[in-house]
Amino acid sequence: MEAADKINLLAARNIHRNFTTSEGILEVLRGINLDVNKGDMVAVVGESGVGKSTLLHVLGGLDRPSKGSVSVRGEAFGDKSETELARFRNRHIGFVFQQQYLLSDFNALENVMMPNLIADIGKTEAKQKAEHLLAEVGLSDRMKHMPQQLSGGEQQRIAVARALANDPEIVIADEPSGNLDIKTGEKLHDLLGRLNEKHEITFLIATHNIDLAKKCRRVVKLENGFVREAE
Image (cartoon, rainbow, N blue to C red):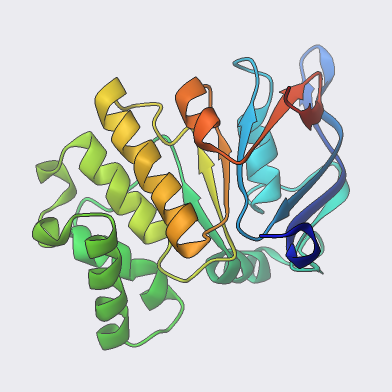
């Protein structure tokens, strides 16, 4: 994608996030500015405990900044109510976490259908979309399996399919391969890269995995509460 054609999807401006502790105010994010364009695959790297998860939670609307603003396609969501914010996330942002958080009482197909059902999309359409996404992540033969019948890598691929269910503007992934062995993690990294290349799905990924970071088009480093383009 040429520079002139780049479409800004996510814009963070002067993001601060402070926490009150027994020892006083802890400043985790201290004035972060970040843009993620359509088709980007951006890795956020940094030392353990530096605040990568905090940053992603703020950028995804799971947490509110102490100061600053976040917008997706120009729509800021800081002033939305909790109900409005939940609806906004459901429409615009997909999430993949280190833990898969699959619903244990539902099979793979039903788990992937869930975001569409929450969005009041008809059951038939939700089922068709879920079947397509499970095929996309290579799990057509696991649709009726319950989460506990699946390997960790299979569960994470289901989580990726679920994150894509509502055609989000951006997928935010927090250490998506953190609980996987090396070989399974590599397969997941290849899947994310293929989805980015084939469908221009936009990813913002916090990771300590060097191999995953290398697959990303951009790498930014979080350090001392700020981000900068990695060398």
